[in-house]
Image 1 (cartoon, rainbow, N blue to C red):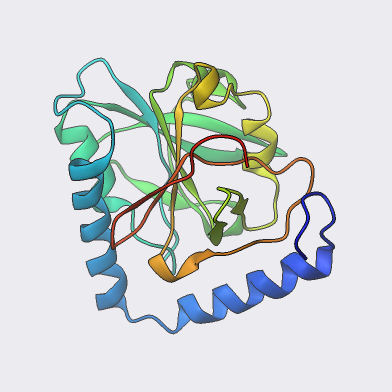
Image 2 (image 1 turned 60 degrees about the horizontal axis):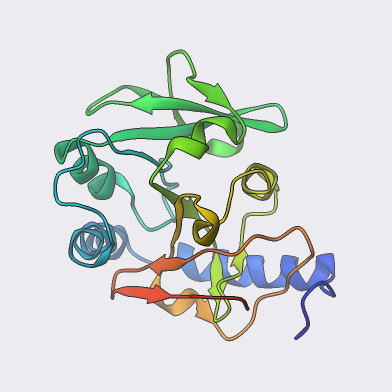
Length: 208
């Protein structure tokens, strides 16, 4: 599948299954090391100030098989950022501000979620963010992201301005080997600006 807007459900399902299998084969030590490296690369390479007081970013609490976001969130909080993380609410995402060492529990799909009162729902809280750290299974060389298949982030991002139009920087967090020449895409799929991996940062500027 090479052309935008012509994917099939089967195309995406097969690629998701392949990547999920590969992720399950990674050892806990490998995932832990990747999470630490990702946080370090974020500090060194992302266009964010060293001190993040007054800056709001959105991130997520990673699944066990995903590149770990714990070190990244810890670093963002230490540098003064306000960090929003999602909680699944029906077909939408609620956003909550997370604090260091805050208790979390497993919600729908096994996703870790903090307790507390949401600051907002859907895309509304993200408009004030400087950066959005997004989960994904793969990113292609045009910056298109293959998600888990629930559509939550595509629905949310559809109402958030792109970075080149004044919106937040969109950063996908994946393993280095998950940057592919092409991923299956549909018209509703959203691009990201950067991919943050355990090796470094990949830029996807301009129009695909």
